Length: 218
Image 1 (cartoon, one colour):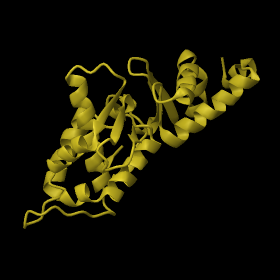
Image 2 (image 1 turned 45 degrees about the vertical axis):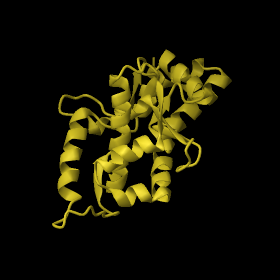
Image 3 (image 1 turned 180 degrees about the vertical axis):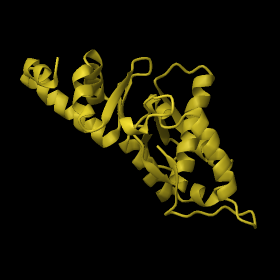
Image 4 (image 1 turned 30 degrees about the vertical axis):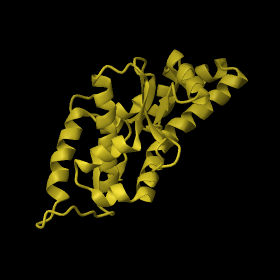
């Protein structure tokens, strides 16, 4: 079937959901089944019949991947396929400090999964995140709660995390979604850590930041 045939078979309600789901993917890259009811509706609608979405996005050089094990749908740029032809999630260049936070969140999610957590979303404390940030020696970043909040809001827009409460409060929690594992892979993470250790330390051993320098892809 071509896209027009799928479209003609849709009810008015399904057409509306198709359009909303496409806009969500274009804006946020990920749809996460367990984030909220709207995400869940889009997830099940797409996963039940992904072909029309692939047809639609193929026109602009994109495709989708449905990961049913993790409850995630991601938008992929076909031009970003790896050497083996495997599609990766859509890419966004990040500033260095944003990359550090993303790697810390990725590590925390991976650690929880390795320790046996079966939850599709994981809650961590701000203290957990600070502990990971300390490994990079980025005291300026740890002490700048506004900068941390801005970065977490950025990742929230891509449905990677949600902040529950006010950063710095004892009861504040950061919800990590299963989409985080697709923001970086193990090889990307290893390369990033190696490059960060080289670039973020000057001759006096103090960490520095160049807010305009991009360092990693999301």
